[in-house]
Length: 272
Length: 345
Image 1 (cartoon, one colour):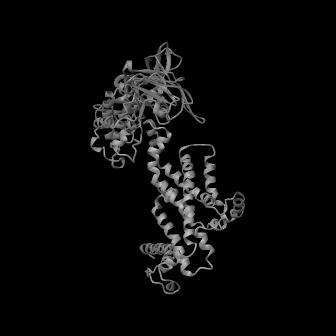
Image 2: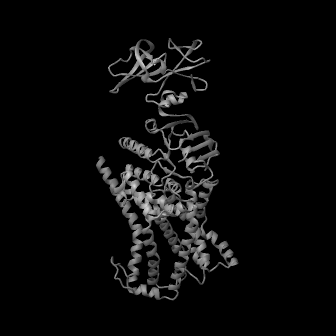
Image 3: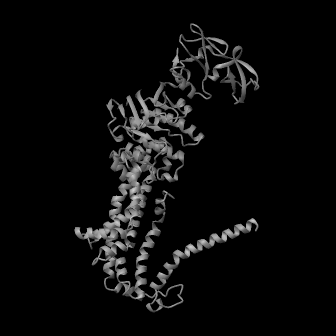
């Protein structure tokens, strides 16, 4: 084979690979939305229409289903609390990591990542026992605490890379111009870091929003939407599952898309 | 109005000693340049004066007040940073006004001062812009204007021109000198560029290995280096050095020639390349490379096996391989102690 034809073949493989990856991600999402926005009768039908019929019967049935609204509201409360806790703790940690040299800094960074090394199912039972003893079981704050431990490593890493991307010189300039440490942070660093911190907060929200295992184990009455859907999975009709799935995916998808460039920053691809 | 006194200031970073007990007094309204290669401690010293670094030992006094325990904002200083440090989220106006607002100055005074310093730095048409919309030279002007607007006792500058291209650097250098001369502030300016140091300074402190080797006016530093390092660091090409052997009290033989020198056990002969001229009798120099530079010609030679450079009139065109005789101007010969590397008289 001549060289251009080899290159053309390589190109085709590349394009096929890209197409496969796109399908891998988009096909389930498309299925979800087509079924969620179709009449209940259409859900079981095949072949699917590419554009859904925009029949809201499935969705209205879903939102009318007893307990859905409560679960949705619980999800929002837990996620919001998770967001506040993980940024409240994570952003100062990220700032400290980027600005100060302290003994054990590398160990600390390692430990932050290590928290993700223990699978939640392993922790769930002892956690449940501990929560029952302390009275944290089946509470919004209890679940938010667990979700915070899940979201915290990301909050620390994202804000660490964010603060590292802001030159120390800017802070020093503020100090020489009359600021103390707190003023320099609020007047110079915070305005520059705010969009990224917001992004990191949204990410924490989404982590909590999507989390199902801890929610299912640790709550009984105050179920979040994910736990509620899991619980009623075997008893609910297909349209309800699709509508619930869409209701879960849509906000997460939207938020992640909005903050994607800051999430790349976490991996050092871009700092701005 | 501020004299700066640095008393036995030392700084260690772990096992590394950045500054060894530095003493320096900078007069009111003096333009002092700290000159040295990277890693010599000049920036560390500046940052200690600014309060951005804490000295391991020693005292810093500004205007008769001990300041080494004070944060930067209480020292009466303003600083211009190497990368300008113009705040990206504020307009040029708000950047210049930043320090004034921190002082809770009323709006009329803020506007007056910002306008005045902006005019001084020729950036009055940029006041509404953000730093992202400015060139490097313009950012530099904003950084200087921001410092000047504070009307500080002391302005500290950390290699402010090193990120500008050559032509702009030349222009800004002259402008800085003019602006700072009128501002009545004491200036400390850090640079590794000897031409910048020579052209700006009232006095240069040459630093090496965490010590101030010589602090004197530019001509003195150039003509009478206090140490071998100063002679080899300043001047382009730098000073020539040749070994000398004693042949009598105050008489030294250098490459077969006898010169009057110091009364000492051992000495090294030194002369600047431009203080040489061809003569019938002089140091025998074997020509290696000839570089015509226009106004004069740089000739690289070997004298008694040691590298030796001369700046000669461009009418003279020796060829590589020629042996020429170079006579030093007698009162321009300098002698250094080979053991301590310091100047001998």
